Image 1 (cartoon, rainbow, N blue to C red):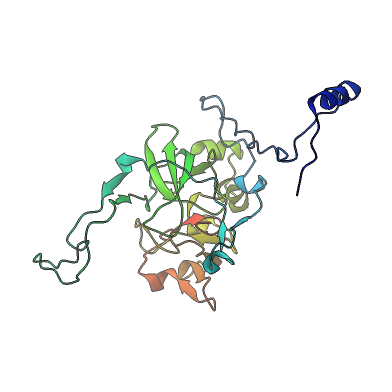
Image 2 (cartoon, rainbow, N blue to C red):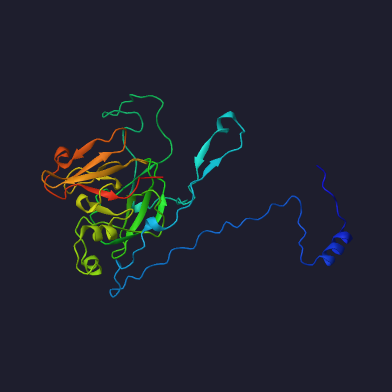
Length: 297
């Protein structure tokens, strides 16, 4: 389609008549403001301020709507292709101190004696394994620095650092977790500052209102019934072994104080109750899980 041409003198005349109107070329696209949301304000870590006084949970913050990226159908394969938009993922490399190179005899198709048993395998791109903390024994507040893609698993991982020691570690990111959030592990017990913020009360409901937040690691007796969890452990003091893939989760069905501390049901197919005594756990507070929602995106 031919575009109308306007001579230079006519354009200057029109601009003098309409001083508040900007002339725009037909080929220019209208600019859209894609400014990112304002960053989260850093909380004070002084001793006179109790970090548990705030009642704003990560779940209360509005989440961005789920979007899918479409492609121009240059080939039949991409006509109906839809992929999620993960603009929040880190674009750079992984944190190298928490990785190690993926090397071994199994990569090149060799067996334990070095002989080739699978042909046409070898070379390829260098890979590094991310060391993910599935124990989460370190107490205290941890700040999420960024969300990363992990080629070794289906779920995303989050790089967090301890606010007291600044030690960094990788954890499995929960759904909706973003940079700047605060997560904490309560496997070592309930902090005294938390009890002081509650006025010395040990009510289970009041404690759950301060601890059962997205991304926190809690013992089973501190999680309310009906909560969706992931990264479920099977042994006392052990690491998470169940529901670690993206989209997997379990539900806390109930508690039985006479025989076991709690019952967890899987979210795949029919809900199947699993008591602590049936998963090789001993005593109370043996089953530890990461709180809130599904893993991954």
